[in-house]
Length: 256
Image (cartoon, rainbow, N blue to C red; front, side, top):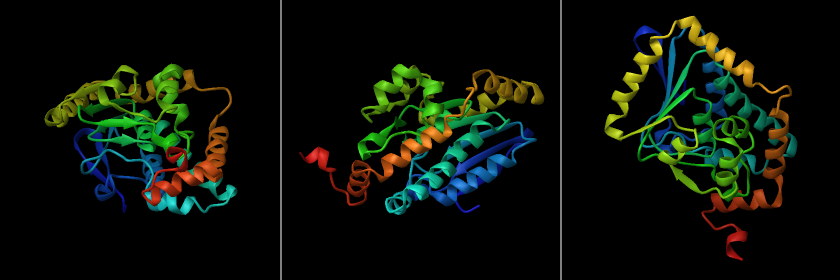
């Protein structure tokens, strides 16, 4: 794979590394397809550890990808959003337990990746944020998973302002389960691995299926969320926000 590194560990444990450190592991269309393919293939593994190479966990969308989507038609944007949604749903519905090892900043869609992990441990310096609204966009595709974790009140508090927050704040709202110093992150993850491997391999997978079945909505919200972000991407404000980001300028609503 071009943008993902997979490391086979002992006892059926695999590490999945987002491997674009020079771009803070931001995702583009190709990385999304690699993630869909990879997480669709997991069946016999005991445990997956998801992390990012370099200083960041995931900075969300790649700027070049955003540059392309800025010129997409509404139909192209909807199709693109559906593939992004497929990535999150594939990870979320993977039967194998997934530990999120948040080694650095997780912003925008990066928080979406955090939200589809079963257990999340973050270093104390990690910063998270639903930053989409500051680009004139909304965290639509990731919202079902994030709101499921943090609840409506926290979603209103953080998704509407786009303000970034600490790993400790992420823990308070239920997005993160454990926070530790950076120097202890690897050791803490090894301790977690031992705890998860104490479960029966099939029982752990069945428990994950059980939880999904209990909380699953009667009607899927995927089309609704993809429609929402599609409208934002092609809107005047969304176009202005993306223009400002790409041109390293302030959007008009911050100038006036």
